[in-house]
Length: 452
Picture 1 (spheres, rainbow, N blue to C red):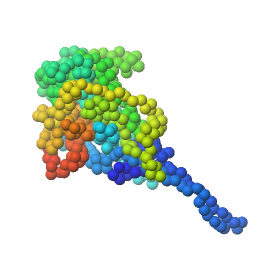
Picture 2: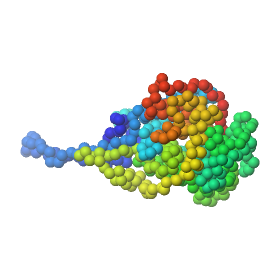
Picture 3: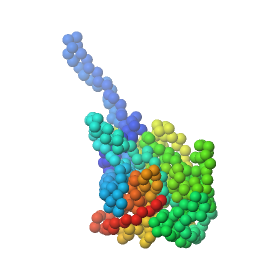
């Protein structure tokens, strides 16, 4: 098996399961040799009856350089979070990165930490090492099999639903007074920190400042069924269909979920779901599809980690055949979702908010990307889970003509803003920006951002 730019298969055994899905292509066919022996037991003649046929090459979409920088940047970032480089220390023991070509759906890098030593699984692994891997879930691929509340990176879904249904317009402003007066009276994160609200904000500004109050109101106006509908357009709550085993479907919060449980859905549930909480739980690969679709204008993407399969005779397997084979192996229907044709004005307002997150004063990732050599779009998310705050950063670049999307996730990472530096390093590598061109901001931030 080969990979684009020489990336080794062993770096993916266990984490991706490519060898499981495409074993029939990889194995090839055994040859047959006949050995003639006389009555004395001596070999008289040996000759090949049937030539062996080597297996096919399954070529990955992975970019070796982007994969390497993704692994290194995530590991370094998690270490910095654990050591309190941003203020308060968090455990930050698990994380994932997914980088996707937003035009083709090809996965350029996929990282899941903690990692493991693949050669040990080939040559024999000690009981001690196996128990260590089991204890810290090193063999578990967080990028596709793990799921977590998305927090504020979900707010673009709520914005899409509000704008596309006419519940809000791009010019509407909502006055954040800090404490939302409906449901269970939830508060904006800025109220928790500073006992005030953001004041009047339109949708772009609400994304820039990650204003909970704004999206509570949008959730109230649009209703949970529309939020569910647009989330499904983006592929949330279902498998992406990537050619890997053990992918989770995640969980999409809403009345549909509650009806299967015989439970009643209330306004308070809608308010929580609108900012990416409630029962919402998605994998990094699902989030990657969502962000990629958002940045490409709503075009449905079939995410893929297989670029092509080259047979022993040099011929290529048709893409349709690969897809059909993979779907049958993984039990997927192969059903195609329609494109989400977002009104350009609405889309621009959402993406402008994401641009401001990274490029304008007051943006939740501005301290990381200010003076950066390329304009990007981004969104931070700090999602409340049981006993921890999981950190997300999603982004894309370049802003005016997006090529890649980046999803960074760190379990108990404290704040989404902490993980933005991972995306910055990856973007720098992808676009050939060397260290002298990238000026890192090392200012330590000590604030806490609830639900951001």
